[in-house]
Amino acid sequence: MLTLEHVSKTYKVGAFGGGSLVAVREVDFTVAPGEVVSLIGESGSGKSTIGKMILRLISVNGGRILFDGTDISTLKGHELNAYYRAVTGVFQDPFSSFNPVFKVSHVFDMLRGRFGGSVEGRTWDERVGEALESVGLEGGQLLHKYPHQLSGGQLQRLLIARALLLDTKMLVADEVISMLDASTRIDVLNLLGDLKARGLGILFITHDLSLANYISERAVILRRGRAVEIGPTDRVFGNPLHPYTQQLLAAVPRLHEKWGKQIAPEDGAATTCLYHTSPAARDGSGSPRPAMAEIEPGHLVACANVDAHCPDDVAAGTAAVA
Amino acid sequence: MSLQISDLRVYYRTLAGDVKALDGVSLEIADGEIMGLAGESGCGKTTLGNSLVLLDGRMKYISGEVLLDGTPLPIADYEAMQELRWREVSIIPQYSMSALNPTRKIGRMVDELLHSRGRQYKELRAELLRRLELVGLSADILDRYPIELSGGMKQRLVMVISTLLDPSLLIADEITSALDVSSQKAVAQTLVEFRDRKFVRSMIVVTHDVSILYQISDTLAIMYAGRLAEKAPTGVLMEAALHPYTRLLISALPEMGSRFADKRLMGIPGTPPSLLNPPTGCRFRTRCPLADAQCEEQPPMVDVAPGHAVACWKVT
Image 1 (cartoon, rainbow over the protein chains, first blue to last red):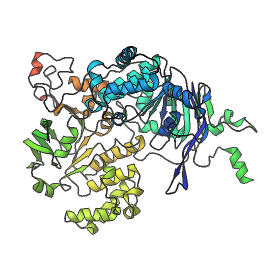
Image 2 (image 1 turned 45 degrees about the horizontal axis):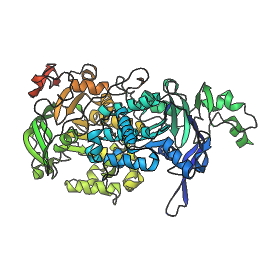
Image 3 (image 1 turned 60 degrees about the horizontal axis):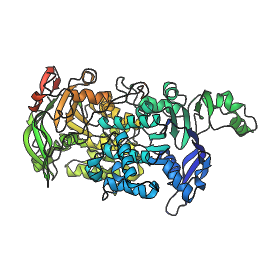
């Protein structure tokens, strides 16, 4: 449904935009209907940038984002409106996602004005009621409240209800539960799971590995703007191939298992690189090498030393000698 | 006993009335103990930490007594506390990223801080450098401005500064929340290292992230709506919690390895009560599956085993 092809983003930085910062480098992955893909990365890894590019909040510098086969950067007018109906974003801070002077009911009315089109008032109200019910909220009283009277979990669920109203096909959930309490975050997470069962594709952007592991089918690990490992969640977590993924997993605080004793996270060049030693990456003689090598079915990994020279990169090694 | 708190009440003054953020909390912390303090937002965990260091203008001391190493800690007396802050009790604040003066180089800032406590920078500089090295920061950091450091570096720097005068009690408030997983681990393990090296005698680590506390704390205390629900050694609390709130809270945490498809975790239905007008009796009773008429009376904190205290009628 949603396909990212070599997507890159470079930000202009500095006083006069003289410098540039590559936030996302040639990222490829897809999201299918009824699938939760989690995009995992530390701060500065470009995970939110990817979410914003999908939502067309910022432009794409290189590559394409395809939605049902159409490049989203070409959409205009009606088509763009239809795209915004089909793809909705929910963000980290629910308190700043709402206009504080509007009641909840007004938020939904505005939605009808923009996207509801020909829907009659009464049918719309019924649909609002249904949508609220399916996110576990009760309509009535709630519709007449202001955002500050609601809890973070309720607001976050309202945003998701908004997506349901529009017959959304794809939800970009950017750190949706990091501001919620432990007792309510799991409810919002379960709600995402229920939506998945209804056929929504969900891009779950997070820095929390245990949450990603809980909810998603596939995981994309980002490091400094590059996807270093993509695969089915149980494979990525059960058999991490990239040294960065292994390092992340070792640092996750677990509930029934204590950390090892070493204090500093191990850093430095990896000694073996699955990408450069795998036959998949080697045999494409002449044609450009794919950015990631498939080690197991559906489980892809990038070069272990993305920022430096890789000891197993034979081609580059001989080129340097020559 | 390093710290003894008995029946501490601290309220927030608001236009609508007093918010009873801390309503009768009693606990004890032994020498060398790292106590984790967890709970939902608004349960009073940060208020408890702050009230041991500084009561700001909105906070009103109502009652209760705090003993630090056997001597009373005059928490309601701003001037008397001034002598003890940093020397006896110290805090790593919630937003230590913004706790550094942006207009001073780090070295000068530490100099000024020490001067304000009547200590000489020269005397302590060697120790400062030794401790910076311990947390993986080099000496040239003292000639840099805070803006030149990353979040994790600032966090570790603030940790070193906060503990430079070897306080008896350190309060670490949500120090790992804004960090990435790998720096989270380094910072959390540094806390334990500081305790092991006797830079601080005992510690209260406030966070909402129970899995971090499981890694580093000796005991865990769970707060709910301004009161203590349960306190126990970490292992006991994780494996054999008694209070229904603690049990529900722990069962709601997604663990590495648990999957939505295999086993659906459940949240806790309902929301915590307003602390402006909290209900009588047990404050968890409106959300509690075990609650009945008896719970309209406030349950006392009862010791069920050595070091394991719980406030619930149904399990004691």
